[in-house]
Length: 185
Image 1 (cartoon, rainbow, N blue to C red):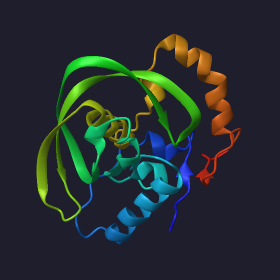
Image 2 (cartoon, rainbow, N blue to C red):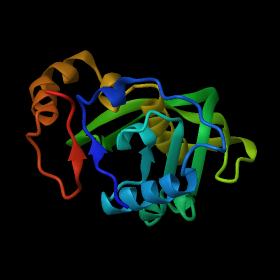
Image 3 (spheres, helix red, strand yellow):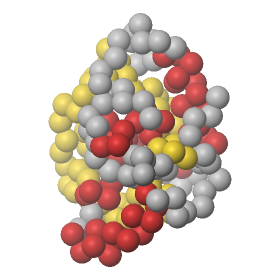
Image 4 (tube, rainbow, N blue to C red):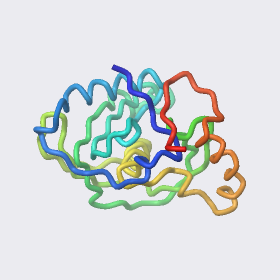
């Protein structure tokens, strides 16, 4: 099943997501449907708040980016209850976009390496270090679990310039090929 994607202005995107356990109802089905939704929407990552579920769950499949960045070949993961242990390294700007903020791309500065503690799809506890584009994708999706959008991380001037566009998106003034959910009016 392909879920509709929540769009900026929807309250679920601003909530801190709740941890879940392995008995969460239909978890396997939700994970499979999140991957399907992400593929249908041409994304490389999707966090549960983006499908209107305020739970700590992320899916990533960066294979579509592997042609430009070979380190992403085979980078497909499920992160349940991820916890950012540490972020370090040189901050770099990278142009980001988001399914929940359609048709907007902005340069965001993030640190180059992270250490993440999480449960995998089989609920095995893992602690891993990620660098480069892998770290960036995880940081972007992890922010969704904290109620943060990438536009929160851009310069005040860029925020001011984008304000009317973001307001328009929250009111449905955009075109995408995937289904969406707007916030309450």
